[in-house]
Image (cartoon, rainbow, N blue to C red; front, side, top):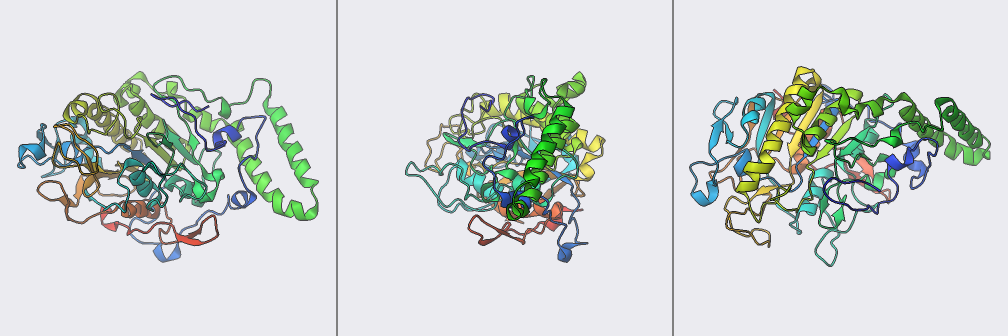
Amino acid sequence: MLVIPGHRCHTCEGPTRRELLRAGSIGLFGLNLAQFLSWQGAAKGASKLEGSRGFGSAKSVIMVFLQGGPSHIDIWDPKPDAPLNIRGEFKPIKTKIPGTNISETMPMMASAISKATLIRSMSYTPNGLFNHTAAIYQMLTGYPPDRVSPSGQLEPPSPADFPTAGSHVSKLKPPTEAVLPFVELPRPLQESGVIGKGGAAGFLGKAYDPYRMYQDPAKPLQIDDLSLRKDIGADRLKDRFELLKGINGSMPDLEKALHSQAIDEYYGKAFDLVLSGKARDAFDLAKESDKMRERYGMTTFGQGLLLSRRLIEAGTRFVQMNWPAVANGNPEIDAWDTHAANFGPLKNLHCPKLDRGLSALLEDMDDRGLLKETLVVAVGEFGRSPRVGVSTSGNSNAPDGRDHWPYCYSAVVAGCGIARGAQYGESDQTASSPKDKPVHPNDLLATTYYALGIDPDMQVLNHLNQPRELVKGKVVTELWA
């Protein structure tokens, strides 16, 4: 069972890679050989893009995914001259970006934004369904969802889904060391009973699912699946590995030709991962000083960001740090979904965590030189309605609540040569739509692939062996200084 901070639930996606890596009982359940055989099929970079500004500048990515839809106008893009029912209760404060203010709820980021570019022109128009799960799927896969259940929700995760970004990266740019290629923490993407939609490998196969660390990193972590069992030492594990290779070698020639490379490769990676201990050590937050842990904040979100930095240091390619709450949860407890109340939860609960954690991540990564080759992206699936108390998605809203708003919102990007202390794009006078330089979620995703040296225009084959574009988006090369 997966332990999810704040809520208990079971996944119905079958065994995860985490379950497959249990030392002494490494299995092949749920995985097909075609996926194994493609494990080493890493993209080496597209020749037509070599030398382009920013292409291949990143070795790794931290995706800080603020599921639930934080209010851009109350955090990143204040409009103090707008009417009260638009500007809200918060005052603007100056930042290290000349002429750019953010909300008074983000005092630490007012300084730390000097390490990053603030995008104020994220925008897209929904194609049909207008809820969190549809927007999350669009944001992380680059494709709109195509199947909706009678309840109006999306269908649960399916092997036919488009892969989430981290899964593509773990296939196309696998690590060169014995580390976890793609880690998702500290809880799944979720809206109501739809869990994990937009957060799985889909048609790539479960071999490329994330390692799902669904625990609260502010508490002691259980990572037994990355440790040698007490009754199985290193030598015994080596013996088991050699036995499996021997069994594989005794197959009939035709079968062996189809199976041996795949199975040896998969078992070898699992064996190295468990035996090296590097992945296990990355999860040991006790190795951090109390001062550093407190700098990030002793919260699920703050410690999750610190853990993200440790995973990047260890060599993980893609870390997705989800806001640790159900996307449509209670704003008075832990969610960005501020229909029922907007200003109190932002001021007293959510913004203090975001401000402390994100500013610590950017400053810590920069101090350690990790920003030189790591792309950090902080974004939600959409923003919030500029006017309070109105319905824009069919939901009811309190007088001080804000509804869903994908037509204009904000993101923070940093690292791998992206301009420091800059603003990209601008919203109109009410933060309702971009005034210039609109950035579609697909553009941000294309830019992420591009930074990693992956051609976003490349084609991949889906579960029916049909060609599909990796993502239909335009790279925002102007982000690089």
